[in-house]
Image (tube, rainbow, N blue to C red; front, side, top):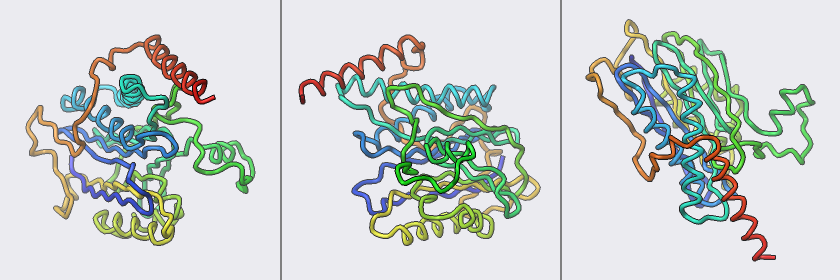
Length: 304
């Protein structure tokens, strides 16, 4: 397995950067991750980091060196990340839970499969054309997907999501794939700080016409300039798929063929994780959610 990867994250005009990104791989597969901690709730950066850590840890456990059932793995990994955030909320005695979006792509056997929750996006580009893009879990895209006029009323803010990880309600997420990759295919994961400033046409053009090591920083800088002083965090990780026959060693290129069996490489930082959370059943999750809601109710009653 051979690919080129490049990633950039910038704070923009915000007080802190709540985006997180990373990737990990074995001899036979690779997992690419991006999360955008949500403002308006506490510790968005913690939720984003925990989502990456949780999914990376599960990948390390199951990729031996390949994941047996990719769609099931992605679904289970998203739910595990959600549970980790809820557990953290309860153990810290918080009255509101940290929340985050997530988009993750797993590549193995020459195919890509991805999962997303929220409005962090994946773009898949082939021969200069947009082959696929995730659809945001926002009220705006929900209306547009239902055939409602794209001129959405102002009350439907594009940033208003109806699902995320860490919410007291069960997250909604979509798993897509597998899609076979061809030499030169490129895919990009990004936070809304990128696509909120740049059009899909702009993103696809840069990703198609420049090496990923050049396209990523150029896209990020362009988004920051266009958004100006009020820019959101902008985070991008892009990958070019290279089949063995067409592989050329360039900046950011990785070949997993030299990795020994059982070796796991990762750019995701380790941190707080409760490994017992993976064993929680639906009833335990519901009890956790009820505890959070009760804490919120008591807090509101005291303020009242």
